[in-house]
Image (cartoon, rainbow, N blue to C red):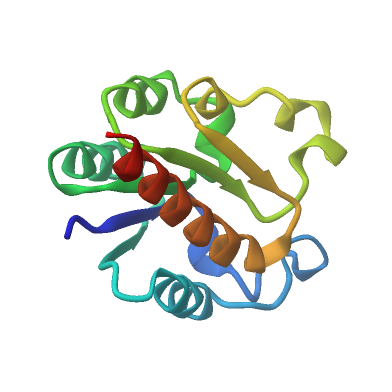
Length: 148
């Protein structure tokens, strides 16, 4: 069974400490555990990086080995055409995830390059959005399997 890739961009290693009024107090380790529980028997590859290059390399790995991608690209959402290009090569479902509601924030956070490829976007549910995204991507995979 191919794994789900749950990929996290810059500064998310600081969850629980970074601007808790925006991002809450849940740590990235707690987020990972939520994802693993929500995935059930499906294997999960869970990564975080502050490097755009590494994030793209993990997308490339998912192209070869993954069933679906849940990605919180953080600031790379709004800046990285290279990340968009990598995600466009992935044939499975992609869910873009943001802890905060990016549309309630400053204008700079309103244009997502990742949304141009994502099958769905989840924003503003806090850390629990990860479990929602994990469950949703499993549903999408099940639907695709039953269709063909």
